[in-house]
Length: 217
Image 1: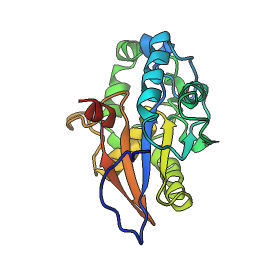
Image 2: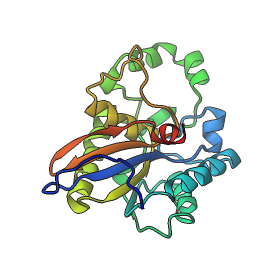
Image 3: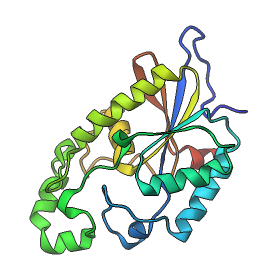
């Protein structure tokens, strides 16, 4: 089976490939509602998305899946496994979405209408963005990054699929690309795409972004 990232590697330091994938679109996603730690089932279009991803990923060898334990991710992984020959799964609560506290269940339209100043201040806070009663992006990184480093140590030279959430994926990639998490920065991630990290020992770097779009083009 092919590798997700084709490049030469040092045989003395086997490179682990970590493919980051967000869960399929949910009913709340379609309504524009903030989910955070709350849950919503995949929508019919979200199920179709995941089935398409599964067909794409079936062309590559996936040795292990590490995933958030929230319901929308569990539903996504169950659909993926139908095409991935029941690849083993490890559920890790450290990969849960950012807690949005009292903003969970609300839409951004509601927040702009009722808490515009607070929302604007949080957006300008970059890595310190922290919804009322929730957690900051720095806190997300602090719990997610060790999971990735541990996976590199545990699965040297393997290809791992990390199924989680937009907040987790952005925090990892923005950290590795030294971004400030501010709105004026150019967007580098497309939604519902696969993003690759590459690691060996304690080193971790970005391998490729938006890979499913790239592979299909």
